[in-house]
Image 1 (cartoon, rainbow, N blue to C red):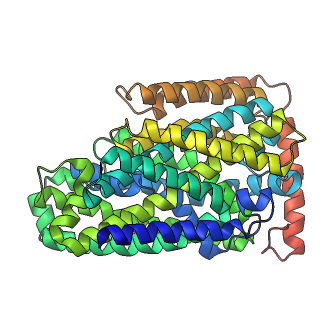
Image 2 (image 1 turned 45 degrees about the vertical axis):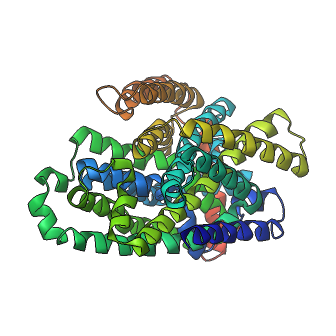
Image 3 (image 1 turned 90 degrees about the horizontal axis):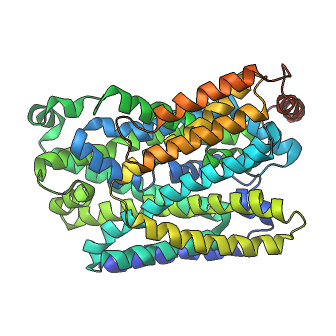
Length: 480
């Protein structure tokens, strides 16, 4: 019965993807759903990055070990989304309107230069591939005991399904798929959370039995929690998922409402797996952390095991194809089109499919070697943080030029990635990255010859055109 439900769910998701294959018209609509996203589609699309498999399985595992502070990674994402809209929305929308930008690296190219665009592309593709790689692992961890099939085999099957969904659905198709996934994961894990907390004696009993530190929001220590929140929040200023929403929203009002609702819903949702993990500390204290969510649900009963399994699968399916699509969009838009500027849309789609298959398979392989899912996601965001900080500084400091942005992003990104893959000795990768990147940014900006960088002048022109268009449309519509 469970196997049939899983099969039907995958089949329904694939059906939506193949149906949307017939609906798309052109590269812009396929990659960013140009002007086709309502607030109702934006909310589930943002869940792709805001929740993910790491926000379910990884969140519960971390909460099982350290407690309620596991929610901070997801909460930092929610904060970041809101800040991006209100502080950097005009930057992205202005460059999209005036220069037809379709990716984050293209916006960085117009504000800085081509070299900065290339570094931005490498950073973002690396970050999203790290996160994507965790999704087949998370899915295999649930499906393997559920179906009685080898974990490695399940991981490969799921990875291939992700690739197929990416190639067929397009951005709007993935948004429609995520409507289904969002409903399933919110309802399923919400119910399991309530029942698990009740089975553990209620919140009052949990507070009496568990160590007090597990209800402390500053665990394992302040520096780590700050890095989770600050690093994740500022990294979203360079988050392709949020920017795709800005590019693809049918109106500015739709973008604002979708972002605010998605951020608020994630604040609530993050508590579900965290509380399940903490309840597991009472119900099943000797269980492995990485499987605690499913283990608790299974102990509660077969019905709850199915709910948890489908909720986790929904979270994973909402994430992996979207992140792979965004990554391949950047490779085709910011690498292939640079190397082959006259390429046709048909040729571009061939490159898109090739990159999707190759990178999807490679990421699936490397994901099988990882251990802590939530730690990998948090580390990935911190690699991206230096790029987000550069954009924030450039918004308020017109003097920031291409040289300062390039060297700060390049060296800061290398330090962050190196620190992360070295196992984050002493502190998380955010701190060494900022310790190197920010001084370089400040020193080179002070040395800049012009008080207002050429890229900032372009931004002012783009913003002026955007505001004129908003005025003519009554301030509600993002002009086509």
